Length: 176
Ligand code: NI
Image (cartoon, rainbow, N blue to C red; front, side, top):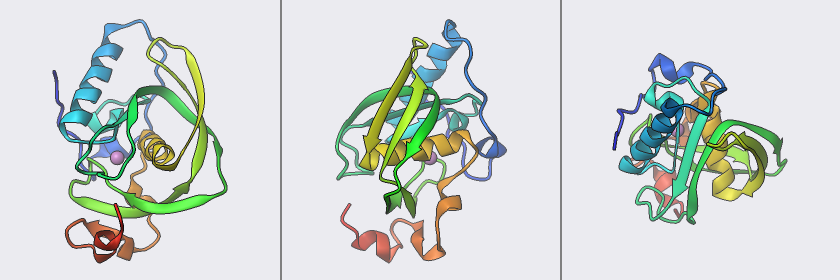
């Protein structure tokens, strides 16, 4: 098991566009994905993007089990998406609280599409297309932003929707 230090906001690796994965038949890809899963689970994330562990590659992982950081979230099975791309964003949007392992202890309320249709490759290099909604759609939008060098504070409308979780009255008052 390899847990990697997660890059924090301000690290230039988080502001770069990640490179597409072209070679699916190498051990390096498998090892990188394993490290990402180990790191996500260790830090109790619900998703992780490769740039967060200093890898400029278009890979995201996500999984929701019983998670102390997101106690109300419905379970989502472990998923590995390579070269993901959002094909359709629903016009309907929802504002909700997000956190990020690159901004420990902080939360921000972010407006995202309620549902998305995405296309990605799996670890075997096969193409997958899926429509997801709610928190699942939010996680994928957040993680794909990482692949484009975008962190969630860049999507927050006002600073009253951003801060440390123990200090934010609006976050405390929300059911979550
Ligand atoms: Ni994040």
